[in-house]
Amino acid sequence: MCNWKPKLILNKEMGITLPETPKPLATYVPAVQVDKYIYTSGQIPLAAGELEFKGKLGAEISEGQGYEAAKMCAINCLSAIKGLAGSLDNIERIVKVVGFVNSAPGFNQQPNVINGASE
Image (cartoon, rainbow, N blue to C red; front, side, top):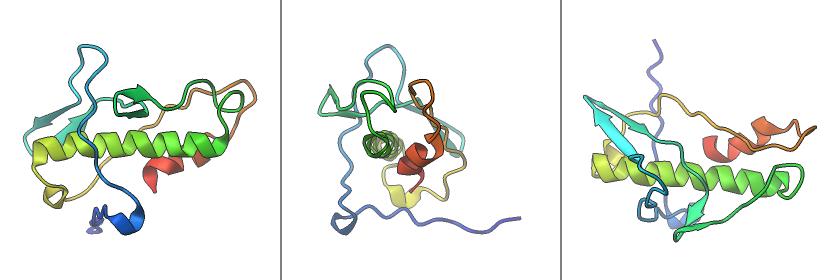
């Protein structure tokens, strides 16, 4: 059994501050708590209600921009989690991260893009 428990640290040194949880663009709920688990809905790279990146990776969007988009999605997920947990200090561990990459044909660097969320 793995006892490793990551410490979620978001601070100015990392250049990360949690925004307000983005308002859903449809009828989904950003996060829901079931017992001790919080599940988040998929997030898109929204900032201040605006979609920051539009297009496909390997066509209109570079790999670096994709990395930043994935990071933004993870930050939005953490914001939704904080809204239910009260504080990220109340989170013991992240169990699963899933990423979907809108890719142009021939683009094969999806793991590098999703690292933006994981890191």
